[in-house]
Image 1 (cartoon, rainbow, N blue to C red):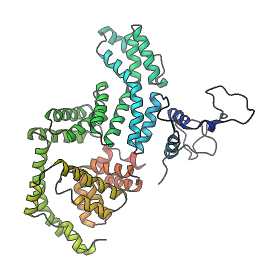
Image 2 (image 1 turned 135 degrees about the vertical axis):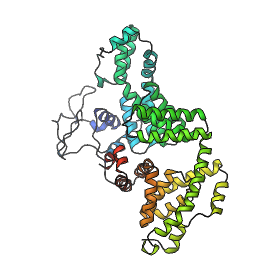
Image 3 (image 1 turned 90 degrees about the vertical axis):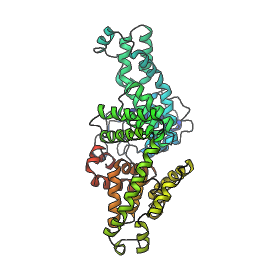
Image 4 (image 1 turned 30 degrees about the vertical axis):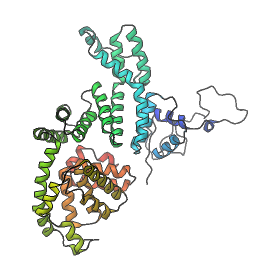
Length: 458
């Protein structure tokens, strides 16, 4: 796997120094004493990246002939520090370490350090909320021209200390000015904590974290969309939750009309409205499932007749191909529709989807396809399963059939296909993830532009 280049910010460099054993900075015998906090390493003139690109502003000096540290190297250094979790860290340092683990798919570790940062930042958020509506009209007018005496990069904790000091002196205007400088970092932390909790399967904690961001900034785009999606997905029988999800999608579309998820937010708002009208997600899904199964029964025979003949499809015999394209009979449809949707069944179907994704990450396409085929008849609207089945068919080289199923998956939910790439990357198959994104970009250029897939393909 190709190593990822990771240009260290000043905070990242500090975190790395924190993780390094003390002997890494030892000095020769009889060396003059070095004051505490001063590096034993000689100062180096700023060095360019050997690739010819200049290093980012604030990047620590790099010795001649060396390259900036990769994320893999940095993670190894952090993991080698036995007491990293218990060491005192600044808000920025804890948040930075959390981001590193989040991007490496280590969600439990990410949550640990995000929560450490949260403990340091929540006091600032509390002060902000207390003061937000307390300013008088005169104070609000003065706030427009006020500034904070601290540098923006001084860090959250120095800002918090200064805010408490000036509040004690009765200067709410300067307190508000200094609070505003670092609020965006706190909102971002809540969003990342929510993302880590969601990926770890803890939806209630994810919702709670995103609500923390929205208390500070009701228009925070990432948390606005994520909270609505989680409410829709996990609390669909609660009409109050559905209305909150609908309002969140509507607010996202209104406040961020050019945002990458604006079109998706409008579509989901409509779906939530339909679910509310049906009395909950289960009734809404049941109605859509019945319609979908009828369409499948009608469309599969046509797809089978128009598809590339089995003899021309790589890796599949006629009997196998015929079995995969067989139309659902009325008896099969009735059996699926009449099956009770118990929590055990739903959990089993979710487990099959996870198994399918694990097979895809290991390029076991036939096993993945078998898992997805057990899910789709029961959950024809499960776009995550659709995306996985489509990629399994592509991996098996099933010609026109694969193209047809891929097109259905992309049309139904390009976001789910995109997320499949994220899953494959998190499971360690970078090449497969990139292949998914490349194909998605070619299939839906509008979505690729909207979601800025180019960033993932760089």
